[in-house]
Amino acid sequence: MKLTQEEQEMLEGKQGNAVKKAMEILTALGDIYGAKKMIDVTSVQIAGVSYDNLGDAGLEFLAEMAKDGKTRVLTTLNPAGMDLENWQTLGISPEFAEKQKKVIEAFKEMDVITTCTCTPYFIGNSPRFGEHIAWSESSAVAFGNSVLGAKTNREGGPSALASALTGKTPEYGLHLEENRQAQVIVQVNSELKGITDFGALAKVIGERIKNKIPFIRGIKKASIEELKSFSASIATYGGTALFHMEGITPNKTIIPQEKITIEEKEIIQANKELNDDSEVDIVSIGCPHCSIKEIQQLAKLLNGKKVKKEFWICVARPIKKIADQMGYSKIIEDSGAKFACDTCMVVAPIKGKFKCLATNSAKSVYYARAKNKFKTVYKNLEECVEISLREAI
Image (cartoon, rainbow, N blue to C red; front, side, top):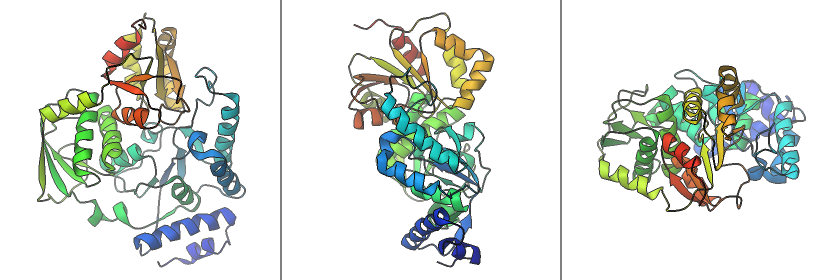
């Protein structure tokens, strides 16, 4: 791979130890994937933030990089393992909290913006069409590539951090236009009713095509919240990092020859597969993190009511502050529901604390089962709120 003089100096350690390690990571990636050169990135989003996933080894790596590493482009973080301010309310131990705070401090030392969210596009990290970025959260990668039309591979936490410290990434994969073309037409012969149907459809497509790039036809309209849910689900169940949705997403593509069809019965079946017949003891909304529109809807649904079950609303802290300003937070908190800022059900250390999760997120269902061994109930937002208001049996 051909490096510029500046990139060579980075690799030789002339710009500090952290930059040297970062460039070593990036050049190794470039060599593995046959990149010819490095390219500039304008935005980074780093996963691998929860201490539950990082452990002491990850914390040690971050502390070492923080000694002389500073970000060169706008960089935000994925959710942490806890609400950074109200962790006690959510039952997080002091020992875990201490370690998680050290992780966040290490990132802060590197000038990373420590807003911990899987929806960076809601809080100001929103690249424009065609920009090269280095994002590592799977749902954000799919959303960034597909809905925003930016260009990123699905980075790991270390490679995303390396891009943040250098402003570079190797040019391969989805940074190249020829690799962004659709590989299979997906004809959807069903009307979709809300976020849960979008999540179920993405599960069906992901399981059918795996990590191929689909050109999806038959969807008449889609909201940002529905596309957020779709991005998370197709990335989770199929590993897809880019999809084209006719008339909805901005990328242009060559129409492929291969074609599959999805019928209504398959979406109904997927919805059934995401549901267990079990008594719910926790409800969680916000995987990926809630938009302000979803918070507004929750406030209307919970106004004057009292929840009977543990209820987490996962959200980026800047969105929560808007909700505070609008009075939505008070309505929601008066109901007994809890905001879980900075974190989510996927990365929080909650295994063994609950038995059955109700959620409107197909991604959350996957990780609740695989990581935490929970039973799951998959319902729309209104139904999740109704479940939260029922007395436990």
